Length: 431
Image 1 (cartoon, rainbow, N blue to C red):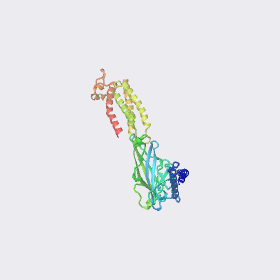
Image 2: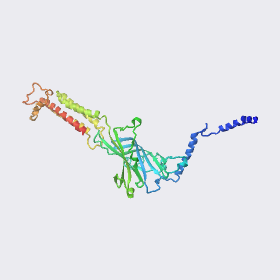
Image 3: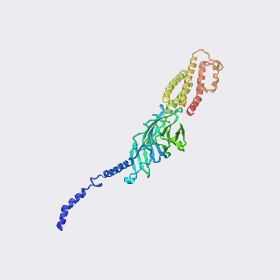
Image 4: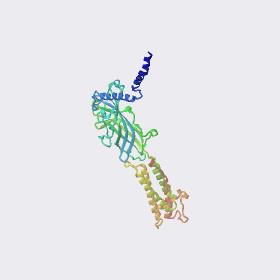
């Protein structure tokens, strides 16, 4: 007996352990658990797709009762907005989320290892045909939405599945901008989306009336709203209905109205101009030139005063060119900033011309006209330190020379321009 046990331990058990260790399973050293599991999942997924697409026709609407419309929920995710003020266009980039229910793409998750989701290609399932009515590429453009989007099918009920599609879009639309209030102009532009099928078949609606999601940046830039020369104030969505050439906010009720009405969705982008350098580049030069123009009248030496006037005119010509170069071409009226600078320019040119004429008259022997002689009445209103008279000047009750006339006239004009320029700045910049 002992001999038999000894033979078993020596010759049989080593071969038995080797046979057990040679079995490779999911948890074995040489086994690949993910490979075994994924192979099983792939098999179930393949059989699931084969089953649901066996008799499926993507051209047919996914309802068993043809009189029931397909409701398509839409949500916009905007990641960039580009505004071209010269072309009067706006380009919107982002993703559009669409969701509807399909009554043919159904299965029992218990028969497929508990699979509730299926990821398929866009062309394999029915999808609503949507267009952009105001697309700059035309109504029949096929490049507004991506054609390579994937579709997720989720089995949520026994008799229907939820279908979700999330294609990207790059839509360029024409707008009607008005920059008459430059640089405080505010505008609005819309992207109008519609289904080619009437509301009897397909009805578009905003997902839970949620406004579009904006993501112009990541992390600390997620609240970014300034793009180029504009600041995005608000992005909203709205729905309306088109029938017989008319647009209405009231949805149709009867079956005939549903058959002759198309549902439309609009994304409305409201923005204003962002011009932080306007104060430094336009307002301050205008203000400084106005102050220099007004202060030049108090310069006693008439030649220096005239030189200052001509210098201001030259400077304003340069700034006027810099101001009108970036000015939008589409305006309903002349912007207040341009109107202000133009008035200052006309003021300075006119005053320079008048001063040049009066200074030239000082070198002539022409007498001062009688209607100019009364200008000495203003001397009593002018502070004495602003008017310097020569000791040999004519008395007030005698005839005035052009020299005395210029002193009184230039000082009076300088005092008069102070309230005029202040009122001009207030009216042009605030109204």
